[in-house]
Length: 337
Image 1 (tube, rainbow, N blue to C red):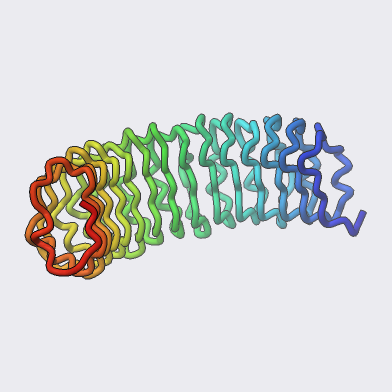
Image 2: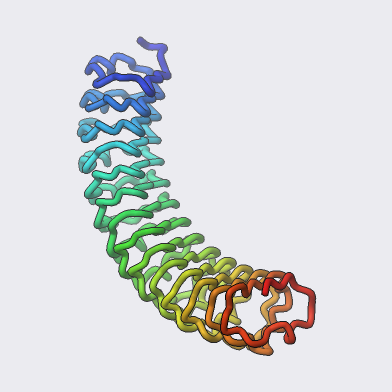
């Protein structure tokens, strides 16, 4: 069938596809999402040279992805999310033009093949919600295209130092990785990183030194971690706009260097019940517009708070130790006592 380009079988009771599916020589899109009885894919699928998009998301009985026996040059998007797959074959690298690989909520997935680092076209990899995934493989080669990596909700304890080989990574999501104990010390070498989310990583006690200036990181979410303090080198995040530390119940102090963060607009330390003092603002911070201190143990604000010249929202609700506050403000703000 030379003309058929799109086949949608999603939500049917199909258990398997015939090997003769390869006779659909011009098939571009094959949609099998939510085929909850589907148990296997034919090995002949790798002979489908025109296939660009394969979606088997939600096929909850699909336990195995077939070996890719031949190079598939056209397949760019592969959706395996919500399947029962335990591992991917090393031959996945034969999908040479793959851009998007979705494996999120594959709750039986235990490992990723090291060959994944040879996938030179990959831009987006999502394994979030793979609760049995304990290790991220070494990145053996530079991956110039990968820009978004979602690892949230996995059982990963640490990332390999070779993560810096993801030279174009913009977004790294590690939220709710409850076994994560550390971040690699060389994370500051990731020069393209803009968004780093480690919120809810309740075993993460330390944030690494920022040994080099990171000019692009604009959003850092550390909320719900076990971090006790931030390194003074946090000021090397020269473009940071949003810093979330809310519900870090072990956080005891903020570095004075925070006042040198000239791009910072939103700072949230609400719910940090061990935080007793807000640091002196030794320099004017022209960008900071929102400061959330609610639920902290702060007793008073320093007079230098007036150096937050653009502050329009100050949230101090449930600061039960607070003794004084309003007297320092010389301009109108939205004050939430």
